[in-house]
Image (cartoon, rainbow, N blue to C red; front, side, top):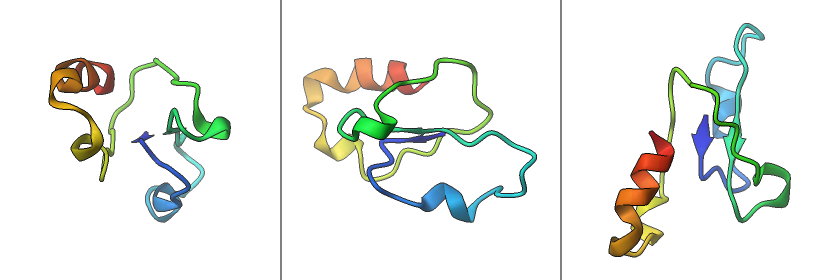
Length: 65
């Protein structure tokens, strides 16, 4: 899962072999704003946490986890 994917195509460069389900999530992008809560093997979260106010970081990390 690319958590906070924006309009990124990052996942297209990884594991794109058709054997895995790739998920994208970003609350600001309408097409990707539904968080699938099924367990994931790997979560990528780049350039996201620095935009989150410190008071909310714990909750954000729990959401990612």
